[in-house]
Length: 341
Image 1: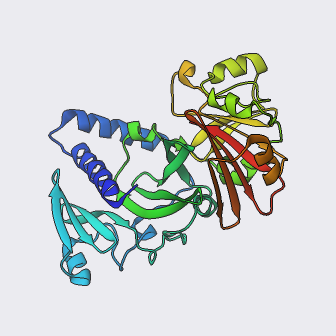
Image 2: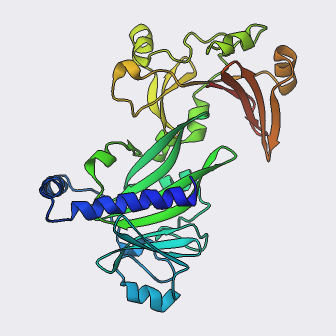
Image 3: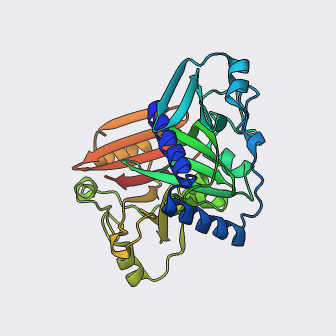
């Protein structure tokens, strides 16, 4: 997610907060009142977020525009969009409400949250450092499956947002934002609950799969139709159909922003945000194989792509509209196998 896209999202979000607070809008007043009542009757537990949780150049939310300019000087760029004033400085911008800073967003590695999280830290670092807090994640559907793109630490008055990028297929923080004001209920409902790091732990997910993939001369042909040899269900299969036949899954958890069901050492991923059961279909399949790098190529032929990034080997085969990918780190015994569109 590039800087300008995040800026636009922040502006739209802040504009919405401004509208919510407008006393001339009866519907907004009702929404805010109902959310306020809900917050009072269902208080967030184990959270303690304040303006001190993310401070940039000694500036925090609630500080005045005058304080900002006195400390940092005239902004590099000053804009007003949708009634929201934005002051931009190198790698950081500030937004205002009634001449007070309401939103701060930074891409600078120099600044960290109160719990020591900064640009460059991993998704796992967020989970580990914010245990006990109300954490939510926003996924993005991509060719690699459902990837977590935004992570929110939410309190009744403040929220921290971590915008993620992917480095060697691992989610890394690209920018951090603190906002003052409640999040809209409909937006909260679009997020995943992240209750613990275990639910999203890459290593734990990998440990649950076994070598159920059968490689043979038909594997590529099968992959081109969205199926894996030796795996009963293929891409596009309704999760409900799998459950109806196999019963309750051994496990149903989150991983990288998507949800999966575990059966017989195979993970079937699907869009957990989908509300309609008949539309929850398999988006990608993950299993493993004990075959070596050379044995895989002997069986399947020359790969479409073969890459070594740091300590990880990637072997990729294009099969029609689908991708069959083998991944293995140096310290692992098996290749993780994933089929996706």
